[in-house]
Image 1 (cartoon, one colour):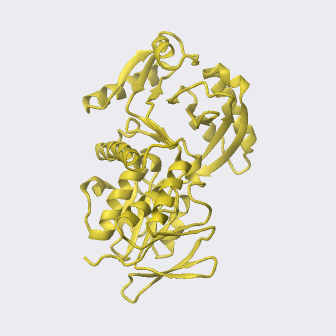
Image 2 (tube, helix red, strand yellow; image 1 turned 90 degrees about the horizontal axis):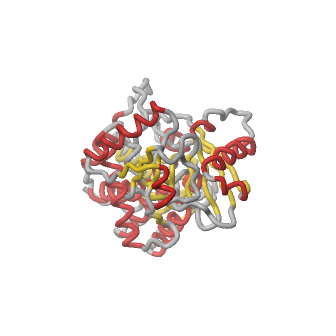
Image 3 (cartoon, helix red, strand yellow; image 1 turned 30 degrees about the vertical axis):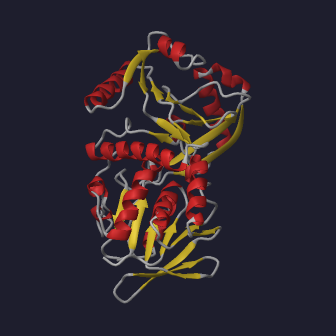
Length: 379
């Protein structure tokens, strides 16, 4: 297979940065294009939890996320952990019998798959791990010691800087207006909103929530869910927790020494076109204070509502689209967990044609060309 001479990666979030970095370190001529600044879109406004424990709906999806966790550890060894990598584990508990039973059932399943799981109690968690938590003594708490959280913006910044250092070009603050093709349908060029045209041999669609728009530029239908989520950052004098956690009504993780990130599916369900982010932030703050009373001394810093980049069936869309030679997709929820492994595997596919078995269930070809309905799955 002839190696692409010039590759445009559309989107410099976590997936685009990982693909671009892997391509550049392999010697490819890479152009990163982003309508904003690298890592400042959805990547910066996600829960950024590296895990496979929440990915048990399909064994192949679990295996891909497990590979993503290992790829993060390898990446930390390669570029250094700096301020982006935080392998401090993850806590989860419930407050009603049905949810608690499901939680413990999942823990048993994961243990049977050789995934690291510890089932303990609220009292033990406060004693050993998180003394600031208000969790009842006898409540079962599941601890996943191999999980982590990532500062996505810092990681993307590192990867983009390293890619540029290896010869990649960054075009930020400009969007893709058109993708030109040759008479045989293969990718030929990318036209940007600043009026410039890039002659390329391949395009990687890593545009996150805008991925369906980029796909449409090559007459491809990429069905995406509309699932907005609200994330709030609190400023603290000192962050009173040490790791990511799913509490019964809210997700909480550190975001450095003086900031924490809050998210809740329950709060997301309240989002509509008239939603005031400030009201959601106040609700999230109140929910977090119930779990960590010390948050009473923190204050809301920023809140954003973003649409998550989730293909219609809930699973990633990664790889070549045969109908448009030179066009590739890297679109996924859980981009933080999957970025390093998708970046490595897709770069290998682009440069050598190698299609890895880990991606077999997540190929773009599974989506109907006519845009017909897909079975709904929760990944």
